[in-house]
Length: 408
Image 1: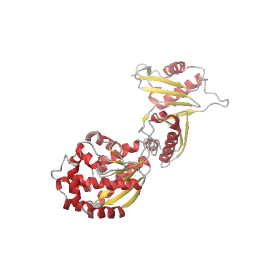
Image 2: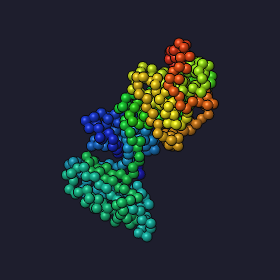
Image 3: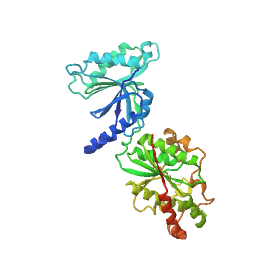
Image 4: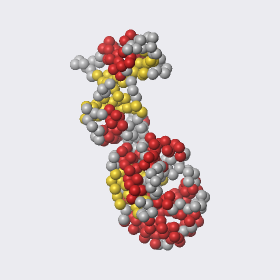
C-alpha cells in the first residue's frame, strides 16, 4: 500500500473549550517542525477536529517515527483520501463501496486469493457520516459496504465485537478510508504549559522525568552538575546525548553545565559524611532554582522516586525542598517503581545511553551509610560550618557555567 496521507487524531486538546484554537495551532507547529527533518514534502492542514498530512516522495517509516514524537497526537492513521466531484458531491454508495473494496484488497493482498474453505479473517466497517447531507445513514452505509466486501472477498466474515480488520470510513469535506491506527504519544503540544528546568544526570531516571514533563506541554531547559576530574568528559557527553533524546521531542534543549567540583569537595571536607548527599543535593537545588529564575521558568523537574535511594525518602525530600523558596519542584516519577521507569527509558531510546559506565558527581561521593531520615534543623546547623566561602564557590560556579544548545 502506497499511502499519500495520514490522519492525526487528538483527544485532550479537543476538551479545551475557548482555548482549543491555541492548542491546535501549537500542535500544527510541532507537527510541521518534526516533518521538516524528514525526506519528502508535506502539507499539513486542519479541519473538523482532524489534522491531515499529505505527502509526496516520503519514507513511510521515517515519517511515522517523526509523528510519534509529536506530543498531543493520540493516533496516526495512514489513509487514502478522495475529494468531492466537480459538483461538490461525495461518491455515491456504489462508488464508495468500490473504493472500500479496492482499498482493502490492496492493503491485504492475501484476501484476493482466499476462499471460504480457508481460515477466514473477521472484519467490521465503521462509517462516520459527518456530512449529514449524505443520503444514507452511517449504519446503512456500513451494511452496504460490508455486503460488497463479503461478495468480493470470500475469506472475510463479519465480527462487530472484536474484528481483526476495522475498516473506517469518514464522510467529511472529503472521504477518508483507513484500517490501521498507530498509537501516538498523547499529552499536550510542547510549549503550551510554560517552561521548567530539569536536573539532568547521566542516570536512568532524570531523562524519563524530562520526557514525561515535556509530554504535558512543558518546554525544558536542563542543568547538569559536572565534577572534573572525578567525572570524565565521557560522562558529560553522555548527558548531552540524553539531552538530545529529549530534544528530539521538544525541538531543542538548552543545557547548563555547572562545574560542581569545588563545591562538592568543600562540602566533603567540612560536613558529616552521612549527610553529604543531602547537603550536596540542597546546593544543586539552590543553583538550579537560580538558573530557572534567570530563564523565566516556572519550576524545577527532578527524576526522584520516593524511597528509591537514601536521598529520596520522604524526609530527605522535605529537607531538599526547603531550599527552593520561589518555585515549585515537580517529581513526575515520585510514585513509579524502577521497572516502570526502565520501561519508559527503553521506549524513548534512553536506556542504553543511561547505563553506560560513566558516573555522575552524585554517585562518586555517596557515603557508605547515608542518613535516610535527615532533620532540617540538623542539616541547617551543619551547613553553617561551610561559612561564607560556600557562597563564593556557588557564585564562581554560576559565573563559569557552560551553556550548550542541544538540538534533535
